[in-house]
Image 1 (cartoon, helix red, strand yellow):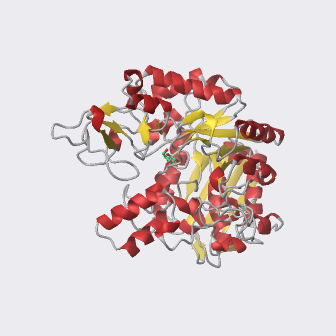
Image 2: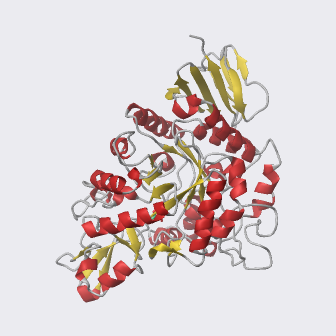
Image 3: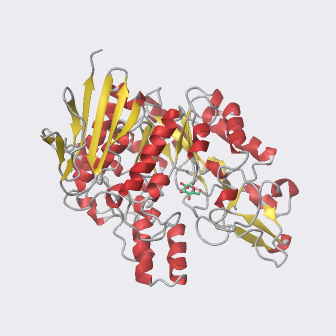
Length: 557
Ligand code: GLC
């Protein structure tokens, strides 16, 4: 494992969909152990594992019932200990996913609160409704509908920013904060090397007021005590640990707050996930629409975060995919003839940026969105809610389905495609069916077909990871956007001491000319998705469809 997080690459595993070792149709911890060598071959330093704690699984484990026990569907504590140990043997650190904005309504704390125990009621936000009996505020749940649920016996509502079975925790309460620190320390003692904190910037709620022009997020996003809470957690737990890396998932955050969340010496977190660049195919904050991706906006946002965070000595996590996002090759690349080129192009853009790259399972083999044609094939609570809400707003079932197909989180949750067998090697044939359908394209897109092919997407990711480790300019250098307004080129320069790197990508599936290209004298091409040199004519670079290339030089002083 690389001790320097700037040189590290994180591989995200969504265990439910990764590998099912016991044939019950659900991925599990032993399945992850079976595939550790694959992750080592790719070259990742850390595995971020999404939650596998005891949970009713209404939100696939993000509704935690018990932070100290393993959900039997995923395995046992011994399995988890073995995973940590086996990872360590291979130089791979485990990062666990801590969901502390809310707990499952089946968590003991909430159960006791519902029994009327005042100590535990104060772990949550129970509030009286308005005089007319309606919810305390007009805030909307991120999964659709009101963020408040009425409890008749108290004549009060409780707050749930997500599903109704995910009750928000009251971090104002010191006892809550103490419990949370205990949980983090427990997992540190097990040898965990990092943490990902789920929607952590939502934990400090400001006033409970109606939002006149929004869904309520301005009252709880990057809230008034957020930095205080994070510092406190840092100091009491991972900050005192030995080289533990942390990443905060920051929902609708601002860059100014991220300077502090992920500043080199602010004593909060190592890095942040921000999502603004993945809203370029939304309408404002509205995800459930069909809007073409805005390339200019994508560049503006990514470059803005790159240079802004660098100026403030703060660190980004850089990524296209996770378990909440559609597959990037379907989203910004192509599923057609140029599938491979586009997957490699997108990888190049992310992996040469300033930040720690995250690869989401299957991304490294160019997995695509689902091929589901019926709503019954979707599993995600959010997709089902919005399928209904869109129709309530007047859309036809077919139009609602089309929007769900494009934006559903299930796009990233279909089983990992290991091979071309019936269930893609996710689960063994003849046992149970996978919990969610396997994409039919697994006969072509699968790991077995790629690990032995030096020209594969998989090997391209390997090379990118190796390059980051080899060249300090990638891990530590400054970044300067190039020709920002070009309609199809995504390009930037990295510099570090005497090292210089130029990265250029044609974002589209047609030839393009880059007149503003810098002079490449003295550079050599160190990576690209087309063989041979990139064509140069009269000082302009001629980029092929989805072409991406990386050039490097060391200047003599
Ligand atoms: C985060 C998780 C997502 C989950 C939500 C609520 O956004 O990534 O999967 O549904 O938080 O915990």
